[in-house]
Length: 562
Ligand code: ATP
Ligand code: MG
Ligand code: MG
Ligand code: MG
Image 1 (tube, rainbow, N blue to C red):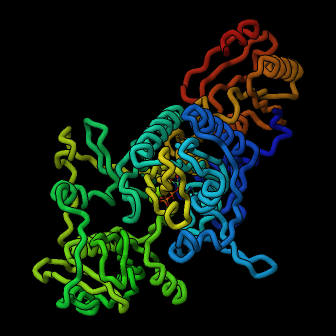
Image 2 (cartoon, rainbow, N blue to C red; image 1 turned 60 degrees about the vertical axis):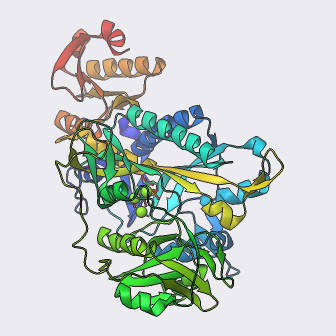
Image 3 (tube, rainbow, N blue to C red; image 1 turned 30 degrees about the vertical axis):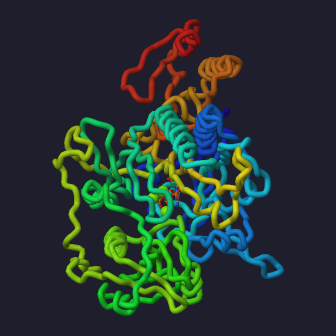
């Protein structure tokens, strides 16, 4: 491509709204432009890099046996009401109305949409397990869109969903995706860690995030200095607790007795104003609601319930949404935007409630065995123990260190949450109807692009790894007004093109200084400089990530490059 004809609007100055390297450089080097807060245009160079990342992701997803499809971004509200996320997702979900006043959601993820396809089209175990994926724009009305492509309101995601006949089968699909993710991030050349993550309380307990190590990351991870062990620090306070409670019974069935405590007593005990619905209670901490819900089968009038609690923190929603939320009686797998401290309170509430026996009648929940000597103080977080740097790693190998990370991927065992709510079942090999088990797996494609820049740049600009560079070779003719420079540079350009090498050709009538600066900024791996010695058929070659230049004779140039 001739640079004189290409849309590469480079800038000398950093944009004022950008405070991290990837945001500054992607704007300055002419890869992206902002259209509105958290909404970006990918210019031609940016699009080329994005496509390279997509290609690597596609190759690894296809290799893993996943099938590519394309779901619609616009989805009827009814689907989201079936799953319950319409009420629990909060303001991050973009909602629109059509001309008939019918409501729609713009896909933040696509569990509902894909489950609705599968429940209609798959009815036998013979087609299972099946993993489907797509690469598509997602919409999330983030509270604080920032850092350019790192946190957008419209962004590109690869999302995949596995449908399984059993938890064992889900384990296999999960591992297959996990391995594919490792290959993807390795091929992208990223320094990353797969960390144990917070499952967001509801749903599957096993989940990992893929974190690119970077000072600008919004997450903190704890990792072992010698083994592969790593955890999101959100999880760190829980690490020790897990060890303690590994054998504790998680589920028990009890029948409530007449001495049962009332909700109000529990509310008083928790020290927060409490609202409650049939299957859930909720309390407010700062700007957040902690929604504590029961799971399992409920025999509301028969007073038989399973004592299994889980918690979900949601941002304050509208009154109407809150009511619906309470009525829905379950949490969601939607995003949790609450700060860690609030999350900790929710976790604590669960811990307390997991040790009470509960029952329900038509008036709502009642609790027995609320033991006040437990030291639960919801608005006081002092008793939370965090893992400290230098502590032994929970896997027994090495000691804990901390680092910041950018979440580029997330794999998640969903279990049957969606399949149950949305009625996705199949006939097993005995002809018995069973609910499907699901997993979901996301990669932030546009975020990954920015994360690569965070790890691959210097003072002068971006330093692309070859496999994602927009072009492999940057040919600079330092003074195109000089006939011999122009002719030689033209010749090299067309030679490279006919070899199928991706080449950007700076043929602009600019000063040499400008061309060097732009070339550093853009970050193409190999530079060929056609300058003073063009008359002797001699050019200079320089790698973007090295300081030294070498002179090369035109006759051997192609051989050197290939
Ligand atoms: P975060 O914790 O950063 O808000 P998330 O946990 O909400 O991310 P997921 O629901 O796990 O995100 O979505 C899968 C992937 O999509 C994430 O791992 C991330 O790479 C990407 N992603 C999520 N939100 C954004 C965003 N606002 N802009 C760009 N990429 C995003
Ligand atoms: Mg989020
Ligand atoms: Mg996250
Ligand atoms: Mg996530």
